Image (cartoon, rainbow, N blue to C red):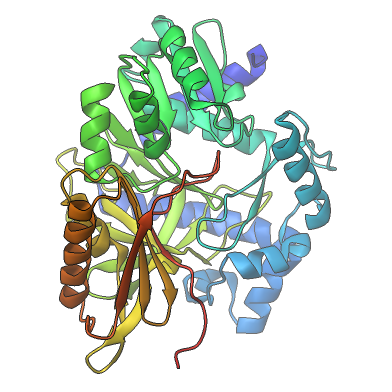
Length: 440
């Protein structure tokens, strides 16, 4: 349980979120501009990596939106001079990996600026990442999450709230919020599924947080609960997952979070919006509707994220009935590495995972699947269950999706195999490009 001072700090941040839920785009932009001016001045003075980026680009801080972006690989390579707490990546990885192995997530790293929480991303995009968060950043994060996720805030705090979260790792962020009326219960994904289902049922959460694939598996294992809200995290939330979870547990909302920060939160109408009161987003167009985010976190100081390119692909909506100025995310369409590169009528074509997921979701009787590119012109379908009819429909659906995407199905070989059980704690990726070689 958090100490009283921490709880008051979290509550202050939560209550302060209301004035940051802008309904006017110009006001939101002015707010971002004020934050950026002060934040970049501080970061450039304390992060040699960031200062060198501006120097190499020949740009002053006021031209930060012109700064060439970097990705996770560059961030990890320059970690020691990027972070502002004097941390070394080897020490961070040692603590984080030891926590993953022992399942004890309480250890922190001491720094001149105070202890920091450390953790690992699951490497969904092919590049595992490390993150470090200070106490102040952790408390602010907790306040933002509390405001946007707790049903009927702030009146909901007057009632006993039981929050169950199923995650690969307990980074300690939730513990910042714990109190007599707000109880957090960590369910370790590495435990047997039947044990988790029984424990979840006995706990009776009012708020349930977890990856959609895990929550669906708990329903199949017999878990029963009626939370006021289900929060999907860590994976792309697909339409079929949402429907099953809403029937089994209750209303579902999403949180968009990564190593790079808290990027998206649900609005009062339950739709996912970018967290633009705290993070600035630019975008690169990829294809017709897909956008790759380039973010600048306007609050995070221990591990600055300045013009950082994500691997995610987003589809944005035109607006939202809630009236907020922050942009609405129609869907997170998957990771860039999950886009397949296959033969087309006149060269190679990119096949986006959305099309393949849509095809597989229409296969009657199919419970789970993966689509994997194993070679320059080969796809492997892993199906559960694998029956002749399901195999026939799945292959036909994939071929149609490939043709729709410009693929030449006469050159693409499909195979089908039973889907093996996923290792415990591994984030689901339904569409994967395992082949990384050059085209012949």
